Length: 329
Image (cartoon, rainbow, N blue to C red; front, side):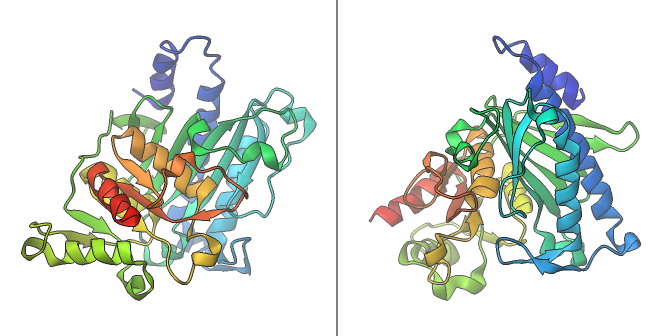
């Protein structure tokens, strides 16, 4: 079953469904195919280097960051279903011309190329997106600042050994793999679930000296393995691409941490709430996992800024709840 057929079937179970969301997802699927091609041909096209500019996050942009961002904008601009867009790579939301937004009922937020610092070493990267309802025909900044619980769809594309699209509309999580022969995303991973317990954690250990005590305690217990209070051995993984980290958790379990530390405390954390934390948290929750800042469920945070940053702890429910209890102690 291809992705269009899948969502047409899902529509039958939704009263008053108009099919607009399915059309938007078709556009996003096409967007991800184009980005996958750009990533795969990067070295051949000479687009693997720096763009020579900084994005709004204060991070050095890769050429592929700029290319992926432009593909997202151009591919979703003229559909008529999108009232507004916002990107991790742009300071402000993108205005949609009157002729294209007159029927738009949705807002699209995206990280066009997550993990782009890895492209030169051929490590998995991806795109992350979140879809919200628009409450205005000409949305302003305040219309984008909705909590993650308001999402109507969230997903990511994975550009690795195969190209995958993993998403949720609030009815579980499903994964689709791009079949290059037909050009279709085909359903290959239906109803993905995350085990409640885990023996694998993902964190950047080089930041250990900056972590707060609750995270120090948790990781020390994991590293102690069978000789410690957890009485079981843990494996550690770290890729440096949130898409790759979350995908691994969906496939085989575990927990991912990018906690607040002494260096990013003034910023509120490291990962972006609207483009990374909210969509990934909803996917993880829909797969049976949990997502927290350590102190609060991520999806319940009320955004204050378009590029707001937050600490992220997500994955196996029991591990996330244990970490949250350490933060409350």
